Length: 336
Image 1 (cartoon, rainbow, N blue to C red):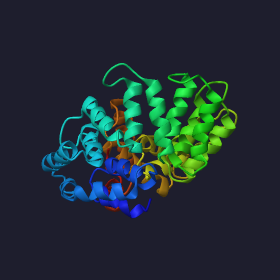
Image 2: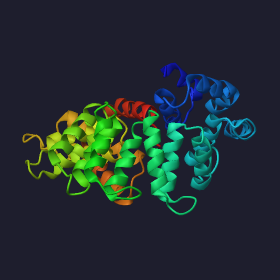
Image 3: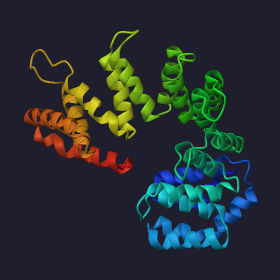
Image 4: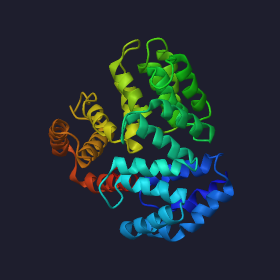
């Protein structure tokens, strides 16, 4: 499907995750006709404009009108997002799942996928992994390939389908081979953490590296943890710092403090006993980012203590430029 239609749905929507979800099924769906997608989207122009302006109350009313009176599947799916993501109202998983179910009747692949998640979790009643497996398979066949990784989890556990870890890993790995980064990371975790019968640390690391090289923050963070822990290979704080900082630079919050800590604890200059200027600036930046992210109390305590020491030796004249860089970072990667 032509990608230009992706942006007809929720163009300029301030909620990135919601735009990503809708874009996902419109961009890859083969079970929804192009004409139908255009028609559904065209009906919702006013609703889309209201949502883009964050006028959640009026946007919700408009989407609901089309969802109920015109049975528009895209409106139904978007209403699910209102409840799932808390757009202008409290989050309500049960109501979100009800709207995903209505949208899934039109075989919208992403709606089918999220309805599968609802059934696995038993949001609105007893769990039904067997029905979820059917939905995941249909969603994948409709172009939402990542659904095969959700189906893989069911095969790993033997939930709703016969237990077959090898088949599960193969399903997700086929998606990863298509170049889908999230599937690369999911495949890596299957090889690293799932059933012992399919664990393979070398393959797991290889998929992690592929995802990391494509800028996937969680994979970069995970590689940093591996380098820091050592194991089959010696520990490498330098490599760990590289991967942690790569993840942090992509806005992956859990990587902020490990990055800051590795800069703060780097070897000092023997002559001065201080950090190299570049490391001092990096420690200041990522410690400040850590505190902006509002982590747990222990991390706040440690980051505050380190930042106090950094401020004691770092020239005050550095701060305006470093603070401006940090402001640009948070503008590009606002908190979820």
